[in-house]
Amino acid sequence: MTTTVTSEMVRTDLLERGRSRIEWIRSRMSMLAAVRSDFETSRPFAGRRIGVSLHIEPKTAVLLEVLHAGGAEIVGTGNHGSTQDDIVAFLNSQGIGIIGRRDDTLAEHHANLGRILDTGPDVLLDNGADLAAGAVARGMASSILGGTEETTSGGDRLRDELGGKVPFPSIVINDSPLKQIGENKHAVGQSVVESFMRITNLMVPGRRFCVIGYGWCGRGIAQYLRALGGRVAVVEVDEIKALEAALDGFRVAALDTLAPWAEIFITATGRPGVLPASVTSLMADGAVLANSGHFPWEIDVAGLRALAIETTDIDGTLERIDLSDGRHVILVADGRMFNLAGSEPKGNSIESMDLGFMLQALSLERVVSGTGLVAGAQPVPDDINRRIARLMVEAMGSAA
Image 1 (cartoon, rainbow, N blue to C red):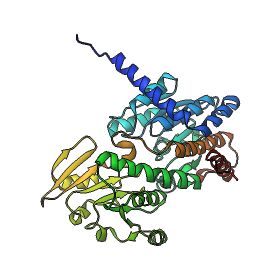
Image 2: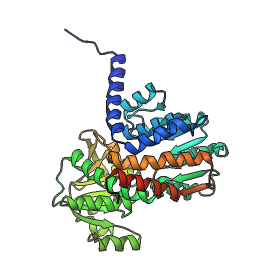
Image 3: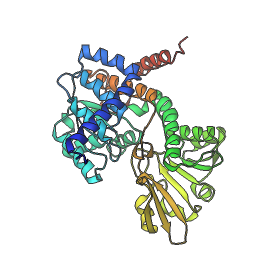
Image 4: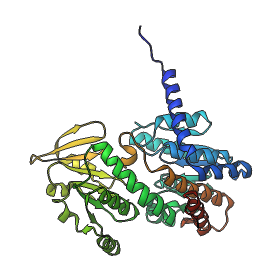
C-alpha cells in the first residue's frame, strides 16, 4: 500500500514538531514565564508593531510569545541560515508573523528584511543591526520609537557604520554584564564546543585549538575546550585582553605563528577578515575552520574558495577544500555561526537564554516607556541588570 504525503501533512508535521519543542523550552524558562504573567496584565506593547530580525529557534520563540502576550504585533524574520522551519510554522499558527525559511539564499534573506520594514514597525528587535541599517538607508529611521540590539557585531555596527545616524534609542543587550558572563562566556562557550563535537565527530582531548578573539565569547570557548582536555592558544590584537588570556594560562601569539601548530581554528571576534585565506598556506593538512560570530565574514570564505582546485560537500555542514599543493582544509557551515547554522542546531543553553531574553523583554518595555533613554546605541539600564541578577541567583538556589 502506497501512502501519498501531501503538503498539508508536511505543514502539520512541522507545526506539531515546533509545538512540542517550544513546550519543552517554555517549561524551563521560569523568569520569562514571570515576565509574561506581568505583561498579560500591563500590556506594555499594546498598539505597537515590533519588527524582529533574530535567530528563529525554540528559545527565541518563547521571547516572541511573551512580547505578543504583552500586546505587541510581531512582524519578523530569522537570520540567514539559522531559521528553523518548524518553529516558524508554530509561531505563525499562533498569530506571530514570521517569514523566511532555513534554506533562503542571502538575497532572499535581504528581501525578507525589506518586507519587515515595509510593514512600518515602530519598535525594532534587532540582531546584527540589519533592521536599523535598513531603516536608516530608507530614510524611515525617524519613525522608529526605539529598539534593542542583541549582538556584539550589531553593537559595533551601530557605533561605527551607523554612528550618529540612528535618531532613536537602541539598547545593546550584549553590553550587559549579565549577557557577557551568562550567555557569551558560559553559554556560547558550551554550545560552540558541543557543536564542534557533534558536527565534526572529532574528539577534543589532546587536540590543538586556536581561538581567534578573547572577548567574552572567546573566553568561554577557550575555557570549555580546555576543560575537556583541549590544548588551546589564543590570537588577540587587544593588548589587555591578550595579557588576560596569557594570565589565564593560554598560549598567546600571532595567527601566523599559531597557524602551523593548530588543528582547529575558531573565530569569535565579530570583525570581518580575521581569518584571511592567505594564512591557509601555513596550516597543516586537514585543518578545520569554524566561525562562532554573528556575521559570516570572519573567515574569508570567498578567498578560500578562490584558492581551491576542488571543493566537496561532505554532509551539508562540512566542506572539504582541496588546495593546489595537495593539502586540504575543512570549512564548517559555510563560515556562518556554526552553533546555530550547523546540523542539528541547539544554540545556547535554555537557562542562559532565559536570562538573556528577560534582558530583551524588560529593555523593550523600557523603550516603549521612553524613560531615561537617549538616541543611539546605549547599555542596558543598570536597574534592569540588577533586578535580573537577583532573580537569576534566586532561581539557581544560591540566594543568601
